[in-house]
Image (cartoon, rainbow, N blue to C red; front, side):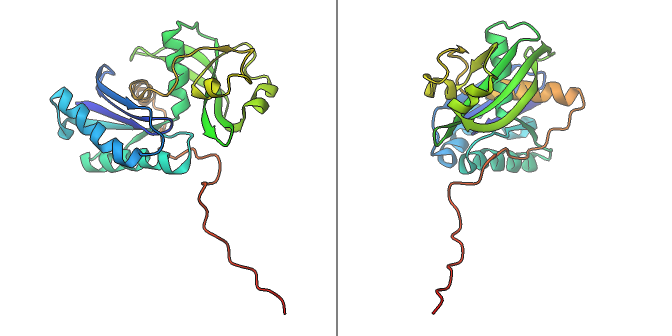
Length: 235
């Protein structure tokens, strides 16, 4: 029995894990525009590497963003379709949760530490959420509790809120807008969400009876809009 996790919020990422949360295979491509072309081949690669096939999958996890509309939709639709194919309900996890949890893990942050996860929202803005680090789960990853967010703002406006004060800051959004985050405790890793950590969080929360819908976190309207009706000129 295995767990498949996909996320297209900040990169194209896929992981395969055992049902106890042990990583089997993982692939990540730092690509933000060709999600539909790249995701399915990545899934095939991890199955080929592991020697397993889709019939082994009993749990499907998908990152719910926040992210721009088109890229995020690819990962969520793929996850939902795969889950339907193997006869299970997909689990959704906020992609920023994985950034915060992996930061706590790799930097050995103590329980109670604040982590500000920041991803690129384009238009000179970032998606962000502030977390408190909790206890280690049975899957070996720290649980994180959201304090504020997820929301979208300019990097400068986010700094003005004071949320970065006293927090460890992670995610590619902080690197992209390094000048705005110059006075914060910015760590270079992790830069993008890990599907392995996303899946581990999903398994821990399922064990705790937490509802995990795959509702996407778009946070703002799509870049592409249907034109409105033209106003008629008055003669």
